[in-house]
Image 1 (cartoon, rainbow, N blue to C red):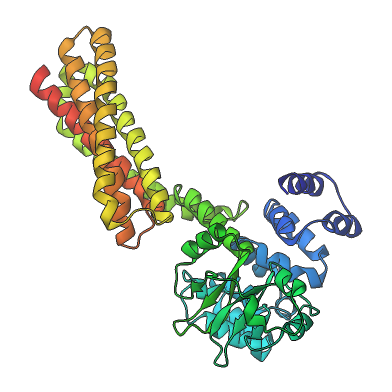
Image 2 (cartoon, rainbow, N blue to C red):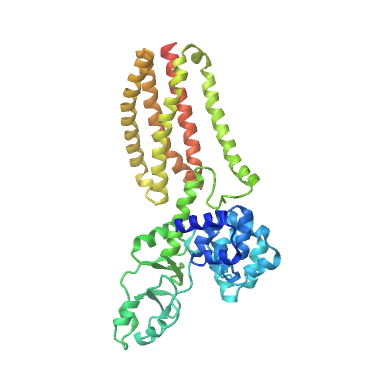
Length: 443
């Protein structure tokens, strides 16, 4: 897909194509590929290409765009164009993008839906957007557990949606009782009851379950979709592998982007002022933490004036602590995302990381101490930096475990804020340990 998109972007930017040529270039691409290509174009060219896309194809592409790219396109569209764009929208499409739309446009989209789609949308919004009940697919085959195989086979003659390989069985009250595989139906005698073919212990999801955990469950289940039930065991719909992989991809991308203070909805060609405003916030936060570290260095100004070697070696101490801490932080953030870290194993994990930090601290303290002692011809300086390295790497291990866990408890994304806090802690501890020990033993 990446090669297709890259080739298309190069073609659209370099060549002056006609509307017919653009349509031909887009015709073999999936909606998500076209969306990626649009996001890769400067806004003026993006709108030129958008105008050439067939009306019946625009909605699928629009839904695949990132939130910021959607907003930029909407800003350029008139009311009539928006009305046409939303005329065939279904509940699942609106749920995908409603958090990036003004309330006025959400109302327009709802009015264009049929009653069934409106009900699906309202039902989904009884769950938070981090719960799997918000993201279920209703396009499934459902049958009563009391019908015969011959009756069930007639259902297979209908149009079957993607990621379908089972019929979901319910009782008279709509409660889910199990699933029957298509291949079992085809091979079975027509007169037997369909319930005799049910798969034993078929897994299911509860609608209030966290959507990332649900996506992971689908990926690990060995099935292409899992039924989603409410607290009364009523079948609401399903959560399929396509949606699961999209959730996991977006989560991974969101964590990556958040380390830079951005989010997965950011647009490559967003207006300069908007991009500057978004990034400027985190530059300001970083500046505050840098001033905090500088303030602690200032306490030891007299020491630095007398022992210049301390100023030369300070970055080594801070860097070693920062790297050690980021390794632990990355491990813990991943563990939190996968649900591997609990109250029962937290202290064992902390003990293990402290041991790792202590061992690495001692090994690298010796290496750095020897190099520093030889470089500046001072055994005392080698001992000072060695002790500071041990202290800072152990503190980095402690912080790398506790900071993301604490942020997670406070409902703050540890991937977003963890690295900023960790760097501040390791810088301050490293500087204070190094300069403090230098003041004691070298002055």
